[in-house]
Length: 322
Length: 277
Image (cartoon, rainbow over the protein chains, first blue to last red):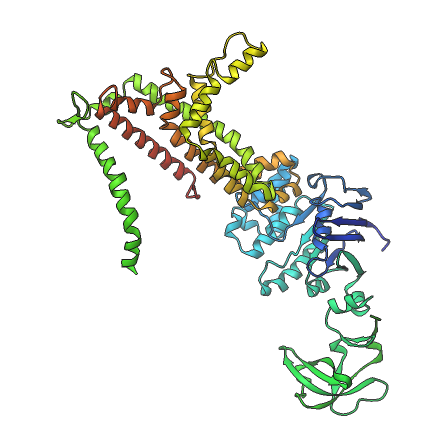
């Protein structure tokens, strides 16, 4: 697939009176991808999103949408739409009128058909006459999606789209959101602090930290080949032995010595934590260093005090200097 | 628990019963009696005072009162809404601006009304200044007319419009305005399609808080309206003083109250249980 960027952020910076929120950030979104902007709270990801939407103005840098600099444009002049974290549905309007808001503002024809088609797409057609206050969190989210997608934006921005939902609902909505993105073919830029959400949803991830880009890549690239310690630690868990890192799920335990050719450390189990589908076993090796191993429930036979071998394949090691 | 609740309720209930309900009953009784020769009331009971209100002369005054109160309320809304919007969007200075809106309350309303009269009368500051600059050759009729009354009422009751409007505007989620812009609405359409409709409770509350006191206003029309611009408050006052017709004054008061309550009832019905105040 030849590169076909829809959005290019070039060297964008933004400083607020209290702190520097975004520092020389550059990133590119390919047409049709679901891109996650991931990072801890305060890393500048929401500010980036708000600059693309037009709610904040960059101090410097360019934001190109289809090759045109949109930085000087007002939010209502950009063909970009936002699904807000709180959904921001208009409480005085029905779901239908919420979805019709943008079409009416543009003076479009056949508003009714377009609104109903959009509501069908998110399975809310039956609730077109409801007010936002009469709907569940999941329904509000779908209404907000319909309200944005009905305008056929070049780019859909989603600010923590799943954070206001019940944890039980989140899994299901994740799949629905991804399926919806594939169906409409619109480029999604999603802001999230949840690494699992980013890994499971995104085609590509940009990881931000303290206003700077740490790494860009597919979920596999970012998780399996982190470019630095921050990335390695932010996505998943890590054991560190000086400059060598190994993930707990690659860390094995055994009572007998493992076959030769692997990296092995003798140790003693100090803690065992039950996590439902697995155990997290902590073992101390020489020098007071603690390593964590993720052991499937069916293979667990380790108790605090047990002498064990802690080992892993050399190929699972990450070499990242501090 | 129940006894404790009663104990808390008792002082205010007693106060309302003696100082509010009792006079109301007295006025109700007065309105149904006949006129005493030197003021006061005498038997027999009659509805004559109420039927006299339907006299075109008094209906005209009633109509004038509604008109003046209505125009004043509308002007308060037109002036108060932008002001409340401005204050609600001025960040940390909001507190200061609200204090300024309420600053006039620190001085007696009577004194402020006299101050306006000094400004507006033929030999007042405004006319003197305009005459001195040669812009006009005769003083403008600024005092003792409807203009003066409405000006005085708008000045006096503007804070009662601004405060409830400010309260609703301040509660407005900024994300809703961002959503409106995001969906393509420039600032003015966003104001009309999102801010104004969501401000309805504040507009209703402010309008009620301004309209009702304007309708029964006595001081402003009496001082700034002169003899020509009589409103219902002055008419009532006249009945208890110069005209010595207590039953008619009482009947007028009661009719005004009935009209006001009727109006409130209609408004609250139409707003379908939204919080008015």
